[in-house]
Length: 84
View (cartoon, rainbow, N blue to C red):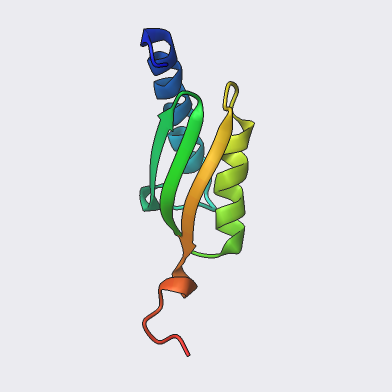
């Protein structure tokens, strides 16, 4: 059930994660789309390496009032056309 209070919390959660990624020099924040619905953060994006992927997920888990983090994060190496 979504109401104004939950929507406001979701906007705050999304803003906090965007800010954390923006100021973290180890992440490229523009590579991620973030959506929060009823306290669940959905992260879609492309990480340069496994370390960046872990950092993004950890930053999301640190935020107060987050119920769950659902990442769909691909690694650049997984998207290569020259896969053998």
